[in-house]
Length: 174
Image (cartoon, rainbow, N blue to C red; front, side):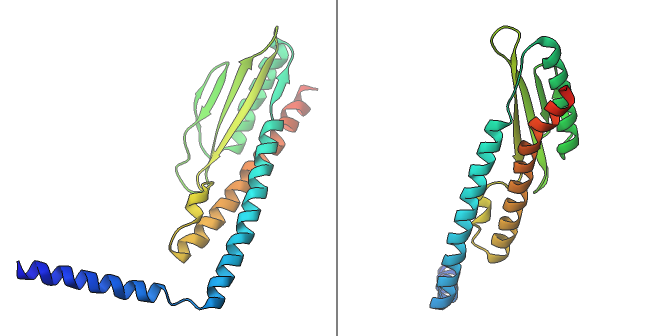
């Protein structure tokens, strides 16, 4: 019982000592970190907005079965060439890769959804492991920098994939 009390007291003392060291940042260091975080928040919002816009603009509308089949075959090639992950499933309405296994890896899913008459809409969904804003906000500074780098690398890659998808498919349909 006495050992348990001593261990508990030692743990509490160690906890308070660690808190004291964590709180030793100068006002300048705190202000610099706050300024950096504000700058990063703005950059993240700009990237997220850009990705959303490119994703919305990447939808492909095809007018007949022949052009839709060809557009979806081109979509499969695009997914194979731009994803780090192999295709897990593919049929005439869906293409899915395996989920990302490492930070910075991209996976994709494409769907062909019937529309009015013989037309269809092809949608692309892109996922990158590391594109998680919470991943950037680690409490350890080395992880915070790592998380930031992964986020921006993933965001740039996802943005590029969405941006280039529709022009790639449309250029091959002409």
